[in-house]
Length: 123
Image 1 (cartoon, rainbow, N blue to C red):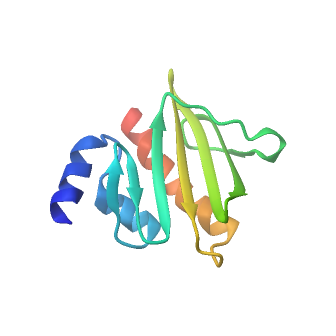
Image 2: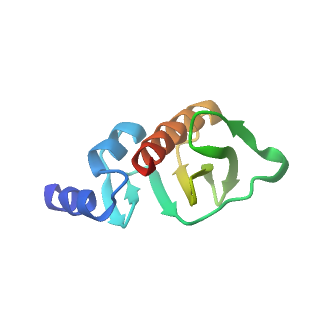
């Protein structure tokens, strides 16, 4: 697992496996570039992407420009998205979980922490 974590640290310039584990609250394994998975949750960062939250959007301050967050349920998973921009670079951070006890507020806090890390790296 240490080799996988080290490989993940090299493949994602905005976050390493240890930081992702701290945000999710459990050990993770990098699955691909900026995609970290644990037994019950995942954290994914996608650069150059956008996500439309529509009327469900919550405007967030202090995370780059025009940051919005929203949540949804899909295939028995709870998902929280945060889409933002720093200068001309857009990004989306997604946290998903199978944990039915995870509240929307807790997921929003986790995705906010991850997005702050990404936005800080882009400044």
